[in-house]
Length: 184
Image (cartoon, rainbow, N blue to C red; front, top):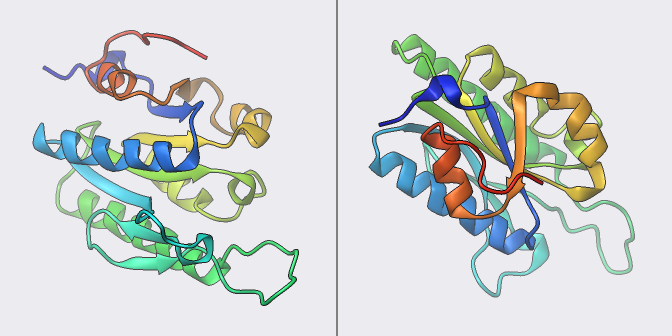
């Protein structure tokens, strides 16, 4: 039985490679759906062997993918994140939240999985408005946090969030309202 009253609104995982964390989020989405949770959000679609610039953001409701990176050409040293792809992915999540609320969905039986709180979100871009929309809807949020923006995350999420190691047991304990197994 799920006891959302004991669950922090946001669970952030850390402490593993990007591929491991994104696989964890995909598996968490599958398991939570199987338990009857309403799962919304985006994860990085990281097919083994895919080039960095070919990573896509996969919408967990529609199956639509949006490009995460853009090709800046040979020798480029700039940030390759695709702001258009990020904006489209964020809009998709916000639309799913709006539709869930319009359909009578409320409470913490809904989880919004957001692939990462990174530099873009620390600067108020990227998936930031999807985070805000999920909090305003009072939906639970599962995400990862880039260690390089840990201080920004603490400022952003405050006491609504708990940070734990990137392990499925931690996600399951959070969802079921159990205390954290190993806080970071």
